[in-house]
Amino acid sequence: MSTPRLVVLSTLAAVGLVSSVAAAQQSQSDPRYKVHDMSRPQPPVVDPGTPSSQAKAGTAPADAVVLFDGTNLSKWRAGNGDAAWKVVDGVIEVAAGTGSLITRESFGDCQFHIEWMVPTSLEPDGQKGCNSGVFFMEMYEVQILHSNGNETYPDGMAGSLYGQYPPLVNACRPQGEWNTYDIIFTAPRFNDNGSVKTPAYCTVLFNGVVVQNHVEFFGRTAHMRPAAYSKHPDRLPISIQDHGDKLRFRNIWVRPLGQ
Amino acid sequence: MNPAKSPSSRRVVAICGGLVLSATACAQQSQSDSRYKIHDMARPQPSVVAPGTPSTQANVGTAPADAIVLFDGTDLSKWSDGSGDARWRLVDGVIESVPGGGYLTTREAFGDCQLHLEWMVPADLKPKGGAGANSGVYLMQQYEVQILRREDRPTYPDGMAGAIYGQHPPLAAPDLPKGEWNTFDILFTAPRFDEDGSLKTPAYCTVIFNGVVVQNHVEIFGRTAAGQPPTYAKHPDRMPISIQDHGDRVRFRNIWIRPMGE
Image (cartoon, chains in turn red, brown):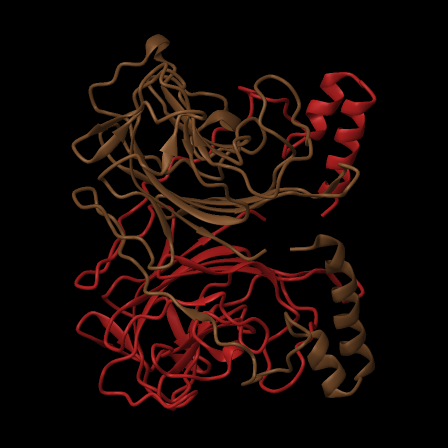
């Protein structure tokens, strides 16, 4: 995060009438290239896919790792073996009491898309009856909860970073409808001695509405305890929480970013 | 977003982790707003917003209930040409830029925001020189997210669609062919200036292009300038958004904005 300093430098450079070449180098995202550099690598072409409707799941971008497309749970496991959650009518349903659904692959920085629904058969009551969550690296949670007409503490609502940040607004759809999360997650970086170099960051669009805008995680998600960091690998699985409630999921994909 | 604050909050978190201070003290430091404790029921409930629906190629979607709808297919009443009435055309419920008609500029001014718009290069358009059909979204009339439909040859990466023009190439190129609608979902954080005009915090931008992240909270290095290094000059907290007239016919639909925070 030394870029703010670079901006100040390039501003100073402009004020001091330093050569524009030097300033241009400071004002590019990658100093190896000059402005409008044709020798810079072309970004990969990606067929973007299509958005979902309530009736029909959309399709993932062509470069995404598709974690669930309605067929099977081959990309997932339980904590101690094959996934025990069920695929019912092309969607995933939590098998309460079997533990989290965990990706077999590990991820660091990523764009993550998931759709979730609280069936009308469930009886939401605050944090009970309608609770799940997406855990990046199995430790940084974006909360899933039925939050349409079901009041709870704001830092535990749908779209919150559980226990840390309430969502900016409550964009939850009614029970029985599909909700979408588009999440941009930046993994924390650690120094060799285990201290935090840069924290984790998260942006969340909830049904197309921004509810977290590049906020800093204060550490691993914990219940009623302060969040703290402890050093971990650069890539770890993503898990979906079994909180005992039969929520449903569809159209899950992830795009690793950068690194 | 106050980057100046981040290092100290990280330090506090590290201290909490290391020294095992009382849970209360740590909990205050680990909340986004230190006036509230963890799971505080006294904290204000976020406002309820009925989300909209996404567009398909055939059908225009709807905006979230709290958005300012800048264009819904009916008229250009929310727009000007920078001084007088807008001079772009309405064609079959969409906006078409008029070469020489000036930038299409919002009458209202905005700072931090979420902006949604959809753009399309008509299938019959043959831009001069094979370079592509060019336009762009100018946040605060000066920070550009590029709009471009490439023709037969590649362009410089920091000038492709989804680029922060001249500064950040897009992470990927998820653009759709001519005649199809593309969507931009932009999260923009305005720069902050000190009283003496110096830069306090730069502008930041996240761009989701047809559902694909192409800019992830990148720092804008200054006002967009062609062929010269960008710099910042102090300006008001809120300014209009404009869409560039680059001499090509580009179409737009479903434009809405949600002012954020501040």
